[in-house]
Length: 109
Image (cartoon, rainbow, N blue to C red; front, side, top):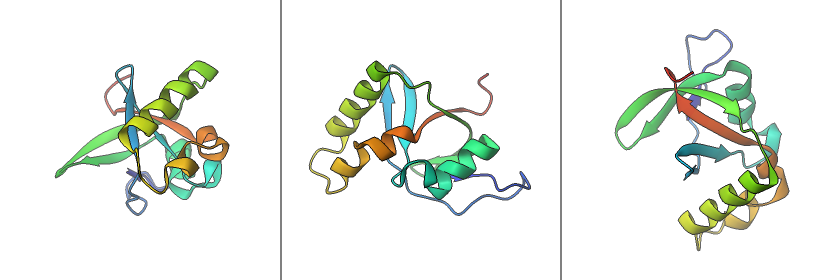
């Protein structure tokens, strides 16, 4: 994930992130909660790129419209996708949950 810097022309340093799909939507969480650098840049600039395999895509970022139900679905998706990963307990804890980002195609309103 590469959010734009404040100049909206250059990108923040690329950050590897864990992403999951819930109900057809892509979500990612910041490891350090809302103080995660890429999360703060993504929320501030609302745009950037994501890399999937060898392809880069223009993306739009917004804080997720969190509800207890959505949080539970996203947490379940993290547990299913990243089962056995050492970082899973942290990524499904309260701090990262508060920094849940909705990732959309740049051209989707």
